[in-house]
Length: 153
Image (cartoon, rainbow, N blue to C red; front, side, top):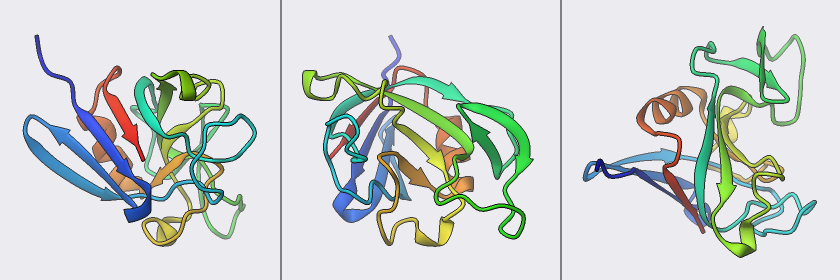
């Protein structure tokens, strides 16, 4: 049986580490502006063990805007329209594996690309999701599988 990949997200260090076949791949990330927590409606990033329950946007363009987990065909452009933290490029939907974070899927917590690439790895600004630079989320998306585990702390 082939081993699964593991993603570790260290929110205080703004780092996502993918452990794949004995190699580490490190990417800058940002998490929730409100910090860590599992309560519904808290706009916090849930802690603990999760799994990737769905990969969305395999053939989307870099910078493509997603609404309700659907590709819109629109590429985000700064001067055309603005949203505080757009969901762009790819989505890795998370599902909690522990009693404390079992609501993660229903909270729509993702790893996704953002229009705020200059802030990634510097400040936390999401409403609960883990956000990445768009080219980084494409690279991560291509290296992971549905069912891979994600540990957030």
